[in-house]
Length: 468
Image 1: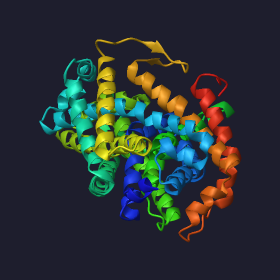
Image 2: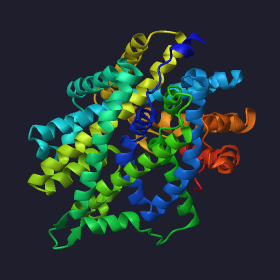
Image 3: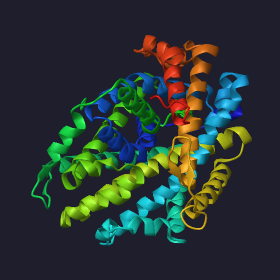
């Protein structure tokens, strides 16, 4: 009980919503959402994503935040508080951010590199062939920039819930939203004539993004889009990685959870949509439909710099603003990932925040250096069960996102849906006086629909279901 009384909390709902939204708005929104939307028929993906966000995403988000507030514990210990025999699920949930943190900070270092390049007038160089590969395969620079990013994240976490996480979110998130909106509006106004004389505009790219393309769509193709949208929700809402449990544990008992959850959903969905508006029209305008096939690091660090270079002088400014926005998004997400681990160490081992943060910083630094070495000294190629050729970073990403996160989500659905019953979560959400408007939907999702979808997603992710 001493631990619960000493526990810090967000000063109000605004701080919680901005921190949770900051966690949700990360690299997955920026480099994965636009690619999937372009690949999966534009508007069809958007419609399915929105439906899933209001059903599947709402269910997992509500469950994790409520578990956190009810137990006043982090993911490592919260599941054991809900049901003593389910503590192993908490261990898996805590393992996810432990695995993600090192490689996320490595990518954060890459963002720092590109932002510095644009700030110092060397943005055009980032568009040159081999620039990205030359940088990530270097021996020293990626490690230095990993440290810069990691220590910035650690500093915020060191300062605690109020002075660190909440205070930084209140500054960073409004700036991030302004940058996203500004770049998205600019992206819609651009026009380019290629060497063949073909004129393409940002508005044409926007129509490709939002208008459903059902040409040649099959049942198998539809399910592929559905599962893509569902897997994106893990990235977009930061569920199944312990983060929302940690943040939920800092929410005061009299806070209106229903209102906060709705606000987080709206904020995240809006930014994910705007990420597509930023990127797809710009890439289409300067690179055509073939340019829209890039995803992940290749989209952000290879394709987009070429787009900025093609814009001329204004591209330097846009590139600078873009990578500043990406850095903000990466920082808020990395802070939440680290906090999930730090709070777990504090609750399980009863150590101070400083000690827990130092331990996690050391773990992340060691793992991050290992990831950096995976592109030079320790380079190898490994074929994953889903057929992708991977290095160390890709393997860590696959284990955390494709295997462990669906397992955590399935376990959570079984625990809440069938063992302790949904009423436990519903009562927690409603104890401040607000009614959970989608109550029947929540029960149906947590008990039946979500587990089935998650099992299908897991089987497909590990290569055991190739018919979809």
